[in-house]
Image (tube, rainbow, N blue to C red):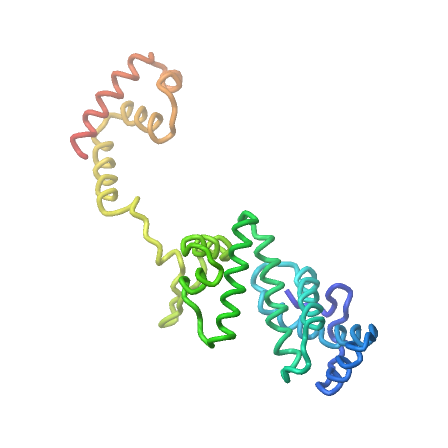
Length: 256
């Protein structure tokens, strides 16, 4: 995704890097109302945006779009940064940029989620971040639900709704050099042992039928044609098709 020097008309090879001392000086100037200091802060931290969007290079998203969204996150971080807290701008800005990009990806997901459901999910995520900052650990669903005063089930549904879909071909482990994909972990009761045995019995039963009866069963139940359509194709009457079909089914039932 990032195998090009220019993104949104910006030559990434020429992006400036501001030392921390200069950043602090610019923040002081910006707080005095100096707009040029703010613009220099934004331009001097675009490499942060560039480094963050590389985390999303497997999403198939356009790099220009992600860069623009990331710049919005950077601007919000700069406008809300508190120099007195004694932390680096990058420490504060990177989560803001990531959050802005994630919101963009959720809102533009191919799976449409209602606005009310997204709002609940965003509130839950904000409550989760606040809990982590306060307690230094991940909250439980019950703790998040209590924080935003909503039923536990609503929180679960909302967070599930905005979760990124996973491909069945997504590798989830790679032990012994053999990748295990998501589809390998998904069961399907439709094709269990009983159905497999029934399929074998049907094949055996079909092999016992005559050619005409076998063709009728195939056209009726595997191709999906009506008795009238089968009759026209074979060249017999619909009544004959019905009689032959019933006889073939009776014979098949002996094997199932």
